[in-house]
Amino acid sequence: MSSHPFRQAARFLLGVPTDGIQQTLGRMLALAEATPLCFVAVTGPDAGEAMSVLWRRGYDRVEAARRATCRAADEQSDVLLVIGCATVADARAAAASTVAMLRPGGAMVVDAGAFLDQAPRRALCEALRALGLDVEPQAHLSAELLATRPFSARAAA
Image (cartoon, rainbow, N blue to C red; front, side, top):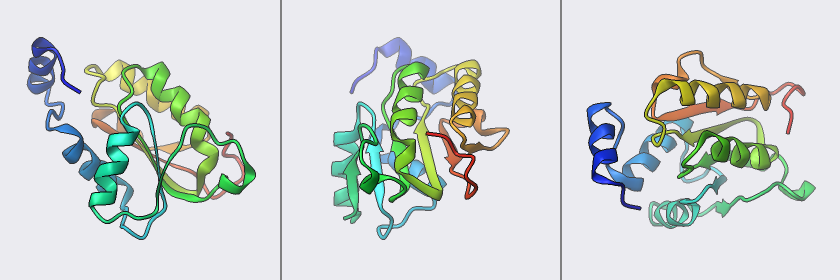
């Protein structure tokens, strides 16, 4: 997915990563402390490309996640990656529709590199908290947002 040159320049000047899905996925996996043994669900506009990259990296337990619709899928994923969403509303919707797939203690990592200002990132962090996820207070400072599903029953889908 190529960006407009002015958008690419703004991302560079603001320190937002511009190095493509390979590096973005690497950072997302590192944040989630994921290994090839983890069960990884991927959602968002770039999910197909991300799955292909993950398979090439040796992640055999990867699936596309669009919506948690069956009990068999609930709480089965160790890691849930939300990648390629262009708006906060899209990222929130993707997270909300798949959060039930994340096991207690599991990590959701949202690619927020498209949001150049801190305000949309803060809004996304608040949206993730509203879903019952734990988000670090300074998470909005990063291009990838880490949220974890608590072990308690307060996580809402």
